[in-house]
Length: 295
Image 1 (cartoon, rainbow, N blue to C red):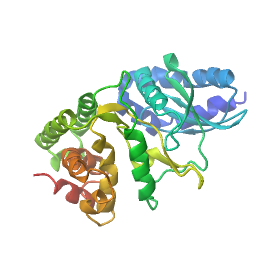
Image 2 (image 1 turned 90 degrees about the horizontal axis):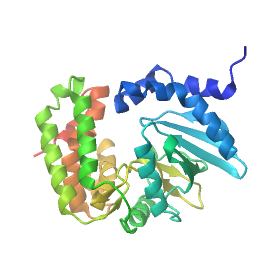
Image 3 (image 1 turned 120 degrees about the vertical axis):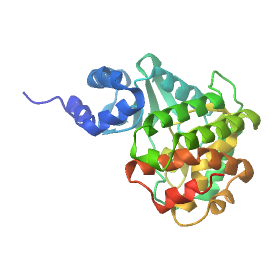
């Protein structure tokens, strides 16, 4: 019997590596969600009149590129409905901002949100950064009042460092990144999260979460992990970009608002910035430069 095309597409996208990423994020209990995904998508595609054309992997769920009655759409699904709820609430707060993807509909009980499709929709990873647009993006995000049931930045810090510690223990990175270094970064981040200015913060703003929406619109942010706290947090990944290309942290900071607080966040989060590459490949000139920032 021929395989159902949608079920085949989703099944093929949930290969061993893709499932491993979800288990790394959510634990072994995510397995039944993965198994039920084709049926869930079929129900939502029928409800929203979507044709799924491509499934993309992710660390917190699945992103499906779809065609619909009025053009391209994006269907996002997450095994944790709370993550979908937080993203939808933030996108509602940012509704109408051209630098933020627009929310079209939700099924939060199913952990599903429906978004506008962006064309060409390529990320800024590995591209020349349009710094004027990045500054405009940061300004638009942080001008919005931080109203609503958003987590505090302190909660976001705890989530990031709890996950990092779980991933670090027993990994190849632990030799270069002892737990006490991670704990010191956590303490610095906790102080910054509770002593700075307050805004609605994206919380995961890096080049992979910013898409090219074409020459008329420019860059657009996606995939927030929103929290209420210091807006300088959203500049950290951008500040580190020149360092990865052989430049300095100051090169990145000079292109961002509030360079002093952004620098403090860079120091606090340096263990997290170094940990990913250390786990994957071991020490590199980039990880050496990042860890050299630590007091």
